[in-house]
Amino acid sequence: MSDAGGTSRDAEEPGHSSAGSRRRRRVAFCALALAGIAAGVAWALLGSRLLAVRSVVVTGTRLVPQSQVLAVAGIRLGTPLMPLYLVTAAVSSLRGDPDVGAAAAVLGELPAPLRASVASVAAPSPDQVTLQLASGVTVLWGGTDHAQAKAEELGLLMPTHASYYDVSAPGSAVTN
Image (tube, rainbow, N blue to C red; front, top):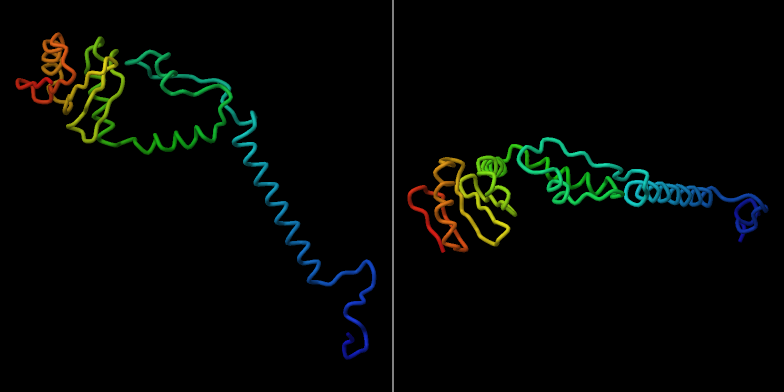
């Protein structure tokens, strides 16, 4: 096929390429380079030891032993810092949450022997703090008020070996 000047479009000189062909090669090169950079960054963040946990330091452990904090955190040496970043971001979003504040306050008010037996704390609202003890017993503590009276009632009721105690309203405790 010839153009108006009589030259063939298909018969280009060897070593020369059309502008469209050069543009396609440039786009392909840039795409491959970006994919390589993305893969390198992903490897550095998630797969390499370059950005991984090398040591763990626990501070502010007045209420629980450092070993228990480390066990619950489950952070192992060599863990990539990026999964940890995502978890930390989720936890930091809980700061200022009244439910979390109530759960922490109740834990702080518990007598030491009871606190040591707490396996988990749930607080769907600040006045509905619930303790799950390691023995399988559930304690509905309620809000942060009247902590001393609640602790005394619970201490009196625990020898009944019930599976559920509601001390949220001191003076009218319920067991099951």
